[in-house]
Image (cartoon, rainbow, N blue to C red; front, side, top):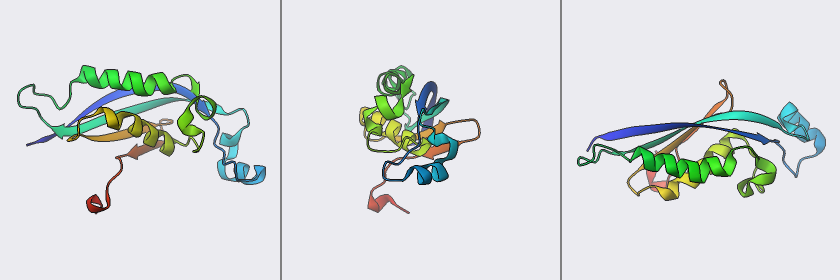
Length: 144
């Protein structure tokens, strides 16, 4: 069965502060620079959410695009758009809202909503020059 990738591109705006509570003020400033500003800063994020799977010979689709759009709207956009990630999003109470961690959180929001045979990849653009890619969690037997 051929594997097909289906990608939906979405945008959301959010603010955050890169900060590790156990670091001193000096170390936070040294590690995160201006991204450690006490008042935070914002980004217009772009996410490419890609679902990979076998083509359904009956429908001709990997996944109904309308369903993917609904999943993203309900689980990602509603949760992250126009939020202060540090203060408004429970997932970031215990982890630093770096682009890497945001991509992982998005993956964890969407993954449970998809059928078992589908793979998921999140490509998050924090800026046009700063991009992270997360392909999900692999079990020990799947690691190369």
